[in-house]
Amino acid sequence: VLMFTDLRLAADGSMPDSTMADQMNGRVGDHVLVNGQKNPRLAVAMGAKRRLRLYNATNARFLRLAFDGAAMTIIGTDGGLLEKPVAANEIMLSPAERVELVVAFDRPGAATLTTLDYDRGWMGAGRPADAGLTLLTADVAETPGEAMPPLPERLRPIAPLGQPAVSRRLVFTETMAMNATSMEMGFLINGKAFDMERVDIVARAGETELWEIVNQADMDHPFHLHGTQFQVVEHERDGKVSKPPYRAWKDTVNVARGETVRLLLRQERPGARMYHCHILEHEQLGMMGIVDVQA
Image 1 (tube, rainbow, N blue to C red):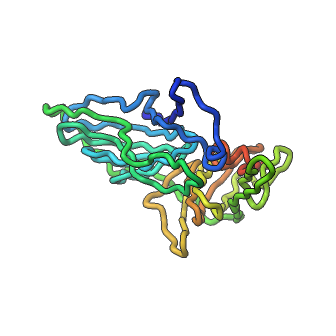
Image 2 (image 1 turned 45 degrees about the vertical axis):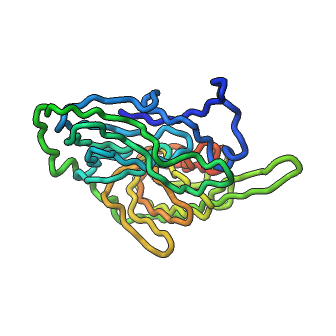
């Protein structure tokens, strides 16, 4: 397991207070840690394969990752295994997303997991460094290890959810207004800020639904749903529609600014639960709702 977190420290080692930029963008740390360490090292034999589950447990850092000197194959996402392995040159993890990889270390020397640039729509000054961070270094020995079997061609079946009985549309927007001393911000869903006493959606257990998540805000928002997993079926941006490269079970999906993401879901357990942007400041400032699932 590789758990990514980040940390902001002042010169004296203390944790500084959040700023107005943090309220807008979400607090991002200066140091990215892997399992609590900065750029840990991993010793592997040449030809070895390692199964790694990556968690983006940062608050607001978007991680576009590549493994220099090693080959990545995606075998799972938030909700477990894919139908079949999928080779990848890079992966993208928004806050709260997970991915499961098999990494093949076929060349001796250092193989590094590094970050690539990603423009998530940073507002204001102080955009953190996104590219060129080394998160993990694998020291690959000259001596080959024991030969490892290939991955199976099929991992598990994932049945498509099929035609929805209900369609819903959630529109993300943001508001900003200056008062005498500061800027007041709000992050809204369908024009409303979160209200603990209000139920926004009433759903029926066992019924397939199509949710259309429309991001009209100026920055990306990682959408997270409690209580079930969903299948992303379509992305649309600038009039261009694309399908995901594979079918998967997920509970978090990044919705880029100006993008619409369509997903299918089925809630099986009755009860009230939340959906929200997974950047803490954004959900605190209103980008959250309640779905009540009834039997």
